[in-house]
Image (cartoon, rainbow, N blue to C red; front, side):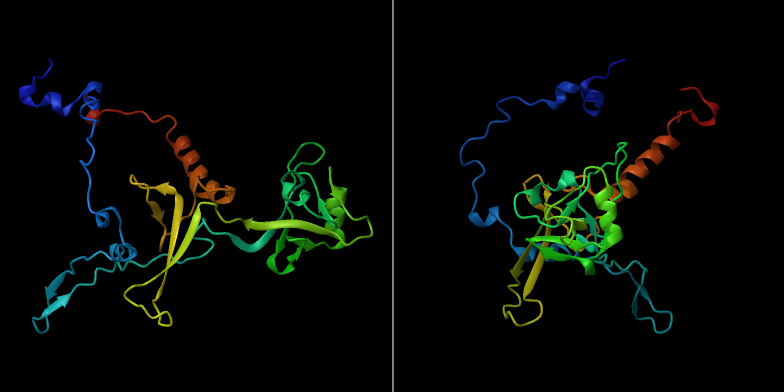
Length: 272
């Protein structure tokens, strides 16, 4: 039986047509939403104030003297630490990895003498494992970061399928490297003054904002990641496979495998 408009059932279960609006409803006349310039912007201080939400503190009477006593609920909100392991947006330069020949276009545009590249794949098409170097071995040559290779490392690269070397066999040999995780192109930072502390030499004058330009509000505002942990992100450029596998791909696979044959059954053996 179809419900009538009087009993409210039509409004509770609207059909597809209920989501549409007429052209007149979508038309706005000039000046309809005009306002003062101040109403179209927000100050940086407002973002700081919004970060500290005023919440009531539970109070009880002290059993000792009967005076009000604050109750500690044990849920102190502490911002996550700003580290390479908690914010995937930032670069991780604790280690550097080899750049393969297929990724070396930037080196081809300028002098790249003494730099060795090998293919991303070996002779049978299997992926080669990147060489990993500690940060203290990295030097800068020709405007690029490279690592001086020892004899064993140089032999690995020279023997690999598709490797090339410039400068001759007797020249010093380097491997082009990049951080193990490069900084995301969407990660932006800004430093402003704190109007409540106008003295530049006083603590608290400089206010740092960390933003993600890929995540936007309905009004177009960039998402703030101040005091936030970002463990994995599919929007990240360049992508970061280790964090995606740990926090995104592996949980998805586990859920699909565990619920692949889930069947909804009625409670208590009832029909329906």
